[in-house]
Amino acid sequence: MTGEPRIGDVFGELLRDALAVATGIGPRPLAGGRLPRPVIEIIERDDGLVNGAPAAQYLDGPQDWQPHDHRAVDRVRGATLDIGVGAGRIALLLQERGTPVTGLDVSPGALQVCRRRGVRELVNGTVDEHAASGRRYDTFLLLGNNLGLVEGRERASTFLAALAAMARPGAQLIAQGTNPYGTRDPVHTGYHEQNRQRGRLGGQLRLRLRYRELGTPWFDYLVCSPTELAELVCGSGWQLTDVDDHDAPYYLATLRLAG
Amino acid sequence: MTGEPRIGDVFGELLRDALAVATGIGPRPLAGGRLPRPVIEIIERDDGLVNGAPAAQYLDGPQDWQPHDHRAVDRVRGATLDIGVGAGRIALLLQERGTPVTGLDVSPGALQVCRRRGVRELVNGTVDEHAASGRRYDTFLLLGNNLGLVEGRERASTFLAALAAMARPGAQLIAQGTNPYGTRDPVHTGYHEQNRQRGRLGGQLRLRLRYRELGTPWFDYLVCSPTELAELVCGSGWQLTDVDDHDAPYYLATLRLAG
Image (tube, rainbow over all chains, first blue to last red; front, side, top):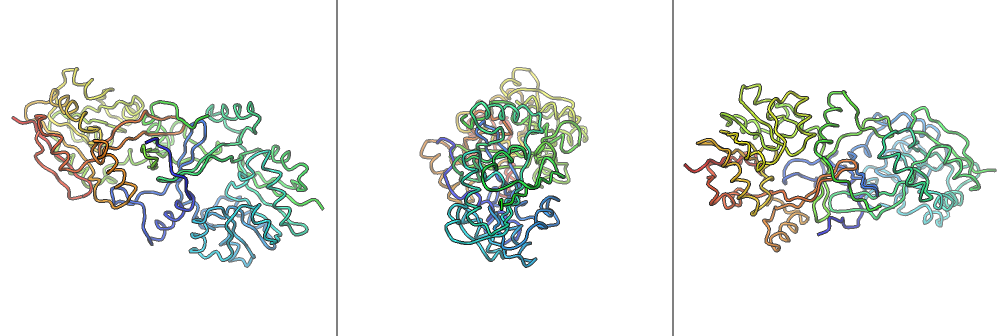
């Protein structure tokens, strides 16, 4: 045996178990077949760094959110696409407020969890796949650090083009990112430096997620500064019109399609 | 980059950070350089299974213990060796009760944490190394699932011989184990079956621990039934005199040196 995980819907299984723990409904992970085991997302980076994050946060109600999440949803207007909808925490609040919102996710299990929690409009797929549907939106959301889905320089232009293809006139993109460059931890600063030497953005993380016996393939996830984001956006047709960094190192970037 | 961790004192670093989080003293792991990050022990099994466990439990005071931990310490008498002392939760209570207790651990970082928390008698090393010291004990403790340190059939006899070499007349060994065979989860039952096909005990886990950039080498950790334990003990000079399984699947095994 090699210690390698089986490829599967890591995020979906994780959220399903987190929902079972939160609601007490359905099979839950047990230690020794008896005691409840906390549901923890394992995030591996390709330099060997590993972190565990309790999955319960994906189910958090607005009272437990970070302040920038509230400021983000207050900026929403019109038909909204919640990209990487996860367990639907943002979509559920928008629905309550009467905003027409569609949740998009590549994880079938995440969409099942969303459906059970009451999210009505859900689509399985990537932004590229969804762009072929002909649907149009006024607001695109990349919350919960989902600016990371921009991946890096190469993916950024096709990703932003897919959103532009789905955009109504005057559409906005609200993305939450994290500026990675405030740390002095050599585990991170060394990683950033190695990335740059390979022609990547410093915070262009190469990650995989693991949960129990499942893993994702390795993928790129971008953690960039607002300055780097401004460069990535250049020439895309989108303009970076506002950066709210009141909760630095976290920030909300607002982009608009150039008229 | 390969995603492989650097070999290091995983357990020590984990406990040091857990203590820093619990006390608010010293550098703590932060997300984005700002928000406290929960300290989570990552346990990988060689079939690709991974679990995360919050490290705070190693610091738990008696009020948060499992009932069998209390029953175990109530059986202690005389000079006691706490094998795999960890963050010292058991040793601290014994000290308070006036029991002469020595904490043994292979992790230098764990011993530092013990020392900061007030454990007075500490030794760095394995049971084999400590057996050379000439120290003698009336009680040996393997709590917190530390029966696992018996590893498997091969290691069991040398492990038990090392304890016998340190035993005063009438000495006892109190070990906490978990019976792994109550589960129907195919991830576990399939692993047990594969183990048996390779001539190993079903619950002879091949594990490594990871925390941030550090990992341990792969090691065997035994999760066995009381029946399997009885077989392992046979011919060692120790006798399995009592099994308390009131908190099944967890159990306390008491062994005594044959007179």
